[in-house]
Amino acid sequence: MIKDNILVTGSSGFIGFHVCKFFLEKKIFVVGVDNHNNYYDKKLKIQRCKKLLNFKKFKFIKLDIKNQENFLKICKKFRPKVIIHLAAQPGVRYSFINPQAYIDSNITGFTNILECMKKSNLKNLIYASSSSVYGNCKKFPFKENLKLRPLNFYGQTKLMNERIAEVYNKNFNLNMIGLRLFTVYGPYGRPDMFIPKIIKNIKLNKSIDLYNNGRHIRDFTYVEDVSEIIFKLYEKIKNKKFKNEIFNICGGSKISLRKLIYLVEKMTKNKIKTKLKSFQRGDMYKTHGNNNRLMKSINKYKFTFLKNGLYKTIKTDFYNVK
Ligand SMILES: NC(=O)c1ccc[n+]([C@@H]2O[C@H](COP(=O)([O-])OP(=O)(O)OC[C@H]3O[C@@H](n4cnc5c(N)ncnc54)[C@H](O)[C@@H]3O)[C@@H](O)[C@H]2O)c1
Image (cartoon, rainbow, N blue to C red; front, top):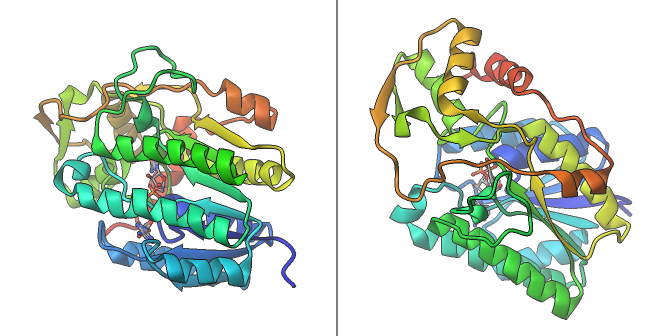
């Protein structure tokens, strides 16, 4: 009989990989589920998955969460104490091109997970929402109780997740924690995101598209902090400390993309070529979160300084890209 076990969806994804690794290093049994879709290079997902398979306590199941029947079988077989749901169709710009992908994974897939929990009497879910739910909010730093105004289809599906979670909490007694993640970065990052793109383009000596003159402001959050925070929340939800909560997951410090480029230039001793582009529809001009609610719940946490997180990322990925 397995004592402590979790199920992580999106286990071959950027955040999923780091979260699985963190739990496995704590000797917790992890079942990973991922469909290895081709939103970005599959090889990176397979590479992450292979690293996880080096751990004895990792079991991988290739599955699309749209398939409720098969996901239910996994729930019944493994009966995870907590499901950490990170599988989703991410990306703001792509949500204008292929909204159906977001409905399939983020709405149908998400609802399937809750249905399977209900049908197999599993109680605890930690799921990824996003800072995108704040959209056009103008009150900085964002607090969880603001009126939400998502600016793009992706953000709308994440807001739907929070609303659906509320319904299942009230009606079926499932315990939920929603994570409003703010621009997560770190080693083995998602190739469509800004920091991995800069690193890759330096290597290839190519220029990077810089929207809005690089004046966008982001609250960058280091991926290992995200994993550790999820672990702390897992310990709480497992012990019935939460019913239905939403937390901003962010360090609460902000930086413009221009300044970020400057930092990377200094660290890599390379000049980054930029192609200036206009503001993109659906983009948020600024994300900056308030993490007081989280801090109260997990009794303080020291976030990684951007410089230190960047250093670790560059050290791993600068020599890793093709
Ligand atoms: N990275 C960030 O900065 C960020 C910010 C806010 C929210 N999030 C959310 O965090 C979660 C993880 O994001 P990420 O950056 O690691 O993205 P990612 O794309 O690297 O990881 C998602 C993983 O889920 C898998 N997946 C997608 N649809 C699936 C489906 N239908 N069935 C099974 N597997 C499926 C993908 O193959 C991928 O490996 C997502 O829910 C995302 O929306 C991420």
